[in-house]
Amino acid sequence: MKFLGSIHPGIVHFPIVLFIFYFIFESGGILLKKEFLSKASYIILVAGLLAAIAAVLTGNQAQELVKQFVKTNTGEYLSLIERHEQYATFVLWYFFSVLIFRTYLLVKKKFTGYIRFVFIVLGLFGSFLIFKAGSLGGELVFRYGIGTQLLGK
Image (cartoon, rainbow, N blue to C red; front, side, top):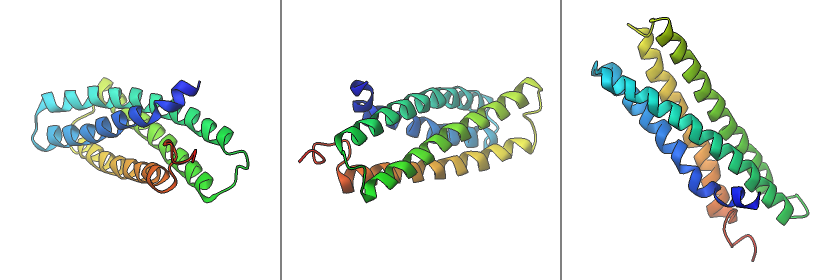
């Protein structure tokens, strides 16, 4: 399982990009009234969700590696890891909920009118959550050296 933890830094960028693109495509499809952008945003949302599942799973393994490496389990960075994990997990469940809501509206043929504008707000808030999770992850890497050889020295 060490392999899964080691690929987390590479995997994590996929859901970040895909969810941001989802927001951009969704907003563009709604504001510009372009159906192909709206359809593309749905596909991007599904791909982002799959990538987020991989990022959370590899992140959990990376966290276990850090806990094994640092025997004392103390330090400011451990609480930072927990907050990063909470935000990342929330992002996963948040966008899963957006997907379920959007799918329901599509199936019921109610993804029309002003309800579509709700998804611009949902995408914007989701982008903020991604920013928070990413900022915490970046702080773990650049301040504490988590996931780099700095931790081992």
